[in-house]
Image 1 (cartoon, rainbow, N blue to C red):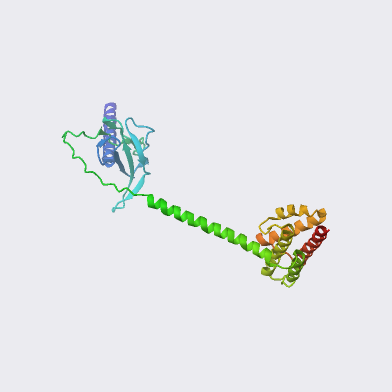
Image 2: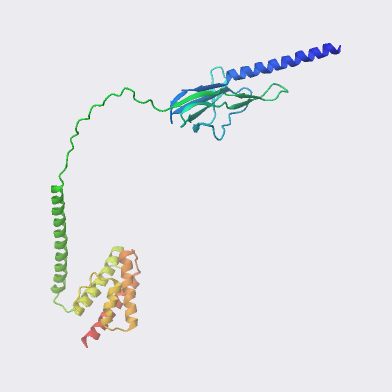
Length: 310
């Protein structure tokens, strides 16, 4: 009885081993390792495709950190492939290369499948394969190459280009000088045209400003621009200078010659800075503020006239 039992156990163990071997053989047959070439030049790339059915798959390929004689250029993520019979497979493409000449073995990579009930998972490896890595074949024909014909080169003469550039530069300089002296002459004519005294001309111009509409934005801007110009024109005529291109700081420095009280200088500075804000910062003061600016300029001109007339 015991002999029969042992005999049955041996048969069952053999069947289990045989079944496991058959299962592993089936899995190995379905795990495909596909390469597009196995003979490459140094640095040339090989496309390696690993494909397997998803049935029973529990763990996919894990690439090692390094492989002797090979470099992994690129590794795509595993992708699912659908077939017409509703079956599925998983596929991954790995691009490898080698910079070592010789005949090298690309190692097998492990893939894990679930075993049968009560059995441990099956570890199946991809096929390893040889790769021949070589240099480009040397030219053994020793044939002489034809001498290449002489290539005609067109030499461009820059002489006339330089002449044209010089003429244009000279014309530009003449235009700028003409514009500068014409503007300077125009400013001198404007100063000399008026037959009124600086004071009378300023008072007349300030009176004309009172006709502006201080509720209109355009009139407000022009009002303050003219107000500053009236003062510059008056002071410039009194001092024999052209002050139209001077800044507010320059005008205040010029006022030191008049020797006005500090309060008057401070009020004038406030007015001039207000006109700058209107001109450059689009500031629009109220009508009473604009009228106050005119009154302060008028008072400054009157005080300056009294100081310089003594």
